[in-house]
Structures are given as structure tokens and as C-alpha cells.
Amino acid sequence: MRFIKYLLVVVLLLPIVSRAQSCAGNFGDPVVNITFGSGFFPGPISSTNYNYSTASCPLDGSYTITRSTNACFSGNWHTILEDHTPNDADGFMMLVNASNAPGEFYKQTISDLCPGTTYEFSAYVVNVLKATSSGIKPNLTFIIESLSGVVLGNYSTGNIAESTSPEWKKHAMVFTTPVGISTVVLKIINNAPGGNGNDLALDDITFRACGPTIKPKLNGSLSSFSVCDGISQTIVLDADLGPGYINPAFIWQKNIENSGWVDIPGANSKASSILINPSVSISQQYRLASAESFNISSPGCRILSDVITLNYFDKPIVDAGPDKETVQDKPVVLTASATGRMLSYKWTPTTYLDNPFVLNPIATPDQDITYTLEATDACNNVVSEQVSIKVLINISIPNAFSPNGDGVNDLWNVAGLLSYPEADVLIFNRYGSIIYRSKGYQDPWDGKYAGSMLPKGSYYYSINLNNGTSIYSGSVLILD
Image (cartoon, rainbow, N blue to C red; front, top):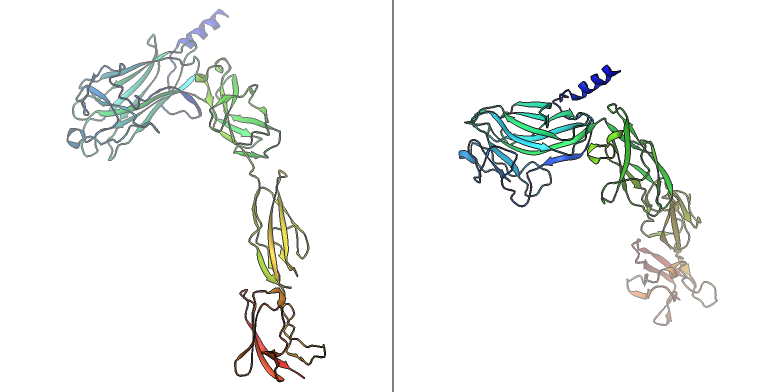
């Protein structure tokens, strides 16, 4: 038993060699993120033994902290317009003109790491020498050690080639902190000699926890999920967790309207049920934080899943369409439109409709009518909208009448014409002279002109309803 304990101690004290690669699983938030500042000029840094220079183009063995470079050394260096850090207005980077002698040029103590945790270390480097200006290529080694000098990981970039334009390249390695180790030392070694070339810019030195892949699920869906709003309901958060942890622990987190990530009380299982408040009908984001159980209480030890979003179904949007105009017995299609989830439709009244339960029924009304469309979605949201149909009455034009005073057919009655108050009615004699004119047809023509009865014979009419339809024309015969 003593031998086993002794062997375990020896194993824990052995250096854990990194893998020179990026994390293949999920990351946590950065525990360390060295960006060299932004906004106000930071001045010299304490983590290098190179000479600080206020010149925009430092000489061999010197460095500066700068936002950009501009055609240094007769244009042999790239002009770099900004640092690497994304969304970092006025951000800085470390611009290095390497020493003639190879050796360590950057050293930084990194605290607040978690024991027994796998991390990805990464840094972004650009060779500032142009491809047209051949010279010595930067060649760096990153070393991570314990405070006692035990190497926990190392990674060499090899020669970093020139490029036609500035290319920030990520260099990364994965290492694991031993049990009991929470502080490490980062060293960056310059392997190449100085002189012509070996010039670089450094930015975004990052340490973040690395672990298994986590694929979050919401009600069994690996993609965003939508629910009905205004309804109290329970959703189930779960995740597919890849191998890597021995005894994983979990904390579900939520973010509402970008207010920030917060732990969900009681949601400490990989599969957790959450009650949704019906009064909060806004999109919500969820993610799962995970770590070995002995590290779960420290945010810097956790890895984080991708984000999965809970949306709420939008209420239906309904447009019953433009008002319509038709003539008696002529069908017209109701051109309604609607968007929503699993909609059903109902038109009221159902009179004159071929099918009142479709979005675009055919109406054949014989009088003016207003229809109401109701659209109901899968969440029982009901939205209504109205549309009106104006029905133009067909007119019937007699071709003869007998204004003889016997009370029978004494007037030229045009059936339906009273429905068109804007109609223009004209009667002509055979010479083309107007003998009758009327706006609308409140007083039908009695066969007279200027108070005198016209002789029997043929007369001619023109009826313009002034509604876009064709003009009616023809002859009418006055009989005895």
C-alpha cells in the first residue's frame, strides 16, 4: 500500500508534457489574456529583458508597445495598421527587434490557474519582415514551468516565414497543471540570432481551460428551440459530453438579453429541468459549464459549451388583403396573407365563400359585404383582420319603352343604375344632338326633350358608370 502511495506521488510530480496543438474540445473563458492594453499608452512592460524603445521602429535587442507599424527600415517591414485583438479599439501589441544573441526575452508569472486542469496556451505572432526583404526568420519556443522549474509544457514554432502581407498566426499548446499547482511561469525563447530579420509582433497571450466537447441540447434539440410565449412550461436542458473528465460536475448558466451569464440555481446536473416564467417572453441563451468535480466552484477551471437559444414563437401576423370590388355573380379571390406557426384560418361570415377555412377563398357576393379573417397558431394566439367587398349591381338596359301616359312602361327604367350615383347618362337623337343628360339616374328619362314629347323612333344612349368598366352604348326605341 505504501508503494502505491509513493508511486502516486512520483507520478504527480513528474512534468506533464504538452501537446503542440490547439484544444480539440471546448474552452473556458480566458483565465489570462495579455493584450498589451488599449486606449492610453501603457509604456514599458516588466516581463521582458529587452530594452524599451520610444522609437516607432526599435533597433536590435529592443521592443516597443505600439498600435501599428509604418514602413520601418526603409520599408523592409510590413505596415501593420492595428493589433490582433478583435474589437479592441486603439489596442496595442509588442513589437520586437530580436537581440543578436538567442535567448529568453519574455517571462511572465501566471497565477490563478486550477490544479489538475488542462489548459490551452496560445499567442499570436506575425513576422513583420516583408517577403521581398529576405532575412532571418523568427523562431520561438514557448515554455511553461512550475515555480520550482519543472517543465510542464514546451512548444517551438519553427521558422516563421515571411508573407506578402501581415499574417497573424496562432501558436498554441495544451498542457495540464499537476495537482497542487496553480501558478506557472511562461517563458518565450528567441532561438534565432538577430541582425537582418528576426523581427516580430506579439499579441493576445491567452490561457484558458480546455476539456471535452460539450454539445448542449434544449428539449432534445441540438439547435435553437422555440416555445409558446405567455405559457408557464418546463424545458429540459441536457448535453452530449465527450470523454476527458474522470468525475465531471456541471453548472447550467443563462443569459437574458445580453445581461450577462449567471448560474441557474439548482441546475447542477447535466440534464436539468427549468421552469420558464410566462411573463418573460424574450429570447434566452443557455450554456453548460463543466469541470472536474473538485474544480467546479472556480470559474477559471470550467469549460463552456456552445450557446443554445430558447426563442418564443412570434404571434401571427395577418393581412386580410386590399378591399375588393366586383360585379354581381363575378367571383373574386380574397388575397390575404399570414405568417406564423401551424396556422389555421376561419372567415366570417361564411356567406358567399367557397371555403371559409382557407387563407384565400373565392367570394361570389351579390351585395356589399365585410369579411373577418381569424388566424390561430399552435400556441392558440388569435389575430384577426377585416376586408370589404363592394358589389357593383349589374345594369339591365331596355331597348324600348312607350311614354304614352298609360302608366305602363312610360319611363326608360335602367335596372341597377341607381347603384351608380357617379354615372353619366346621355341620350342622342339621330343627328348626334344631346336630348337628355343625367348625373346618376334619380329621374329616369320620360321620352321628352325641353318638356315636349319626342316623336317615336330610335334614339341612342351612352352610359358611363365611371368605375373603370366599359361604357354602355346602344339604341332605344320610343313606341306609341
